[in-house]
Image (cartoon, rainbow, N blue to C red):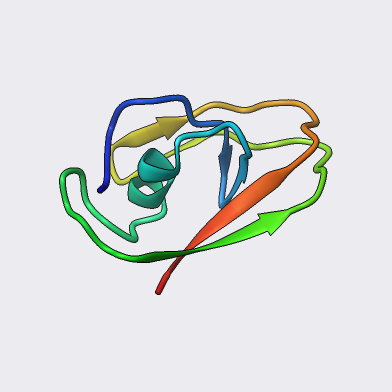
Length: 74
């Protein structure tokens, strides 16, 4: 279920400790309060994460992190 609360670091590639439900809204896969299926791709370490505002959700920039994920429509 899409959410507007929780921590979110990155754009398209999010730190593993970011909120999946908030990342899904940020990517436009679901809306806040909407339930749906998403595909999640887990990735390895990344050097940095870029912050942005998308779909009414603000994400924060972050330095390197040992893992990341991407959210896709299923």
